[in-house]
Length: 220
Image 1 (cartoon, rainbow, N blue to C red):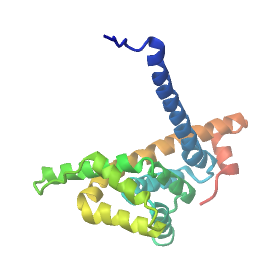
Image 2 (tube, rainbow, N blue to C red):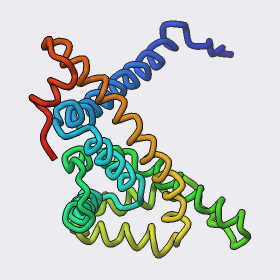
Image 3 (cartoon, rainbow, N blue to C red):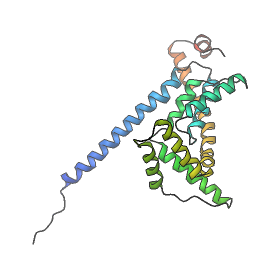
Image 4 (cartoon, one colour):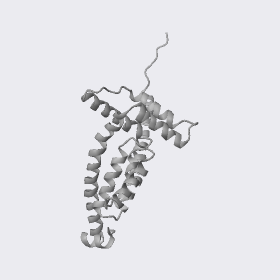
């Protein structure tokens, strides 16, 4: 009779180390992407802080809606309305940068969270609920995105049909429970962060904050 011995510590350590390396690599990639797509546009902007913060809020709101593929166009349309109709300005570069938080990698978890939130809300008010597992949800989105027979436009339309028409309003309504408070928080933290960052830059140049603003900040 052959006795099977449990794997030794060295054999067990190898897959654990591989998993840890993958996690470190993913963390490093996410950190670098965040720096490139979010942090650099924020710190390189010379727009007045209020305009930068409003751009961050608009971008965050659009990014937290189930509209991947057209979010930048939505930010641009909002910018045009704000500038020429409402006479209010915000930093377009920051607004378009912020929608990067919603991307093909984060889309599945985010959108399923919107769906669950919307289903909970409709259940709370007594109008039914949507039942769909995360596995089924993510596999359906992956199948649409990975289709070799659909063009980019067809993929977008198929995704819209699935998210809006097949799943219904819970997806859209659920996203608003996230988009609204996150947009408000984004405005507040962007305002505070940029103020501190610019004050530090002014001090490094031997300038007062007001002198730095007068010299470098774009005029509205």
